[in-house]
Length: 67
Image (cartoon, rainbow, N blue to C red; front, side, top):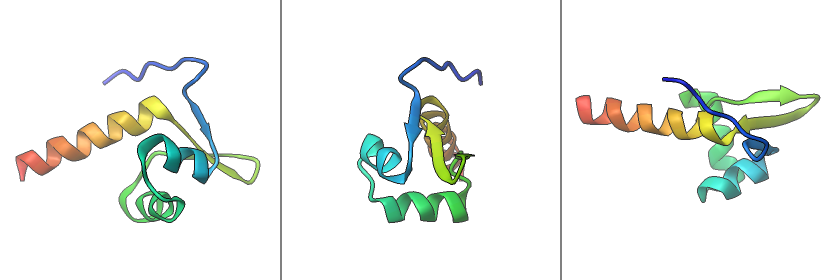
């Protein structure tokens, strides 16, 4: 799956990631640490791309349907 990115794709910080998907920052941390939510560091800040997280959610849904 190809991930398309644009200038509005970057989510800078756990609160931004959480707000973009209707989660709480603690849920983002849990998903990152336990379930492989795709994130990366910029300095000491945890970041994610909106498109990569959407693709990850789609894969999780697909795996759930396959189980």
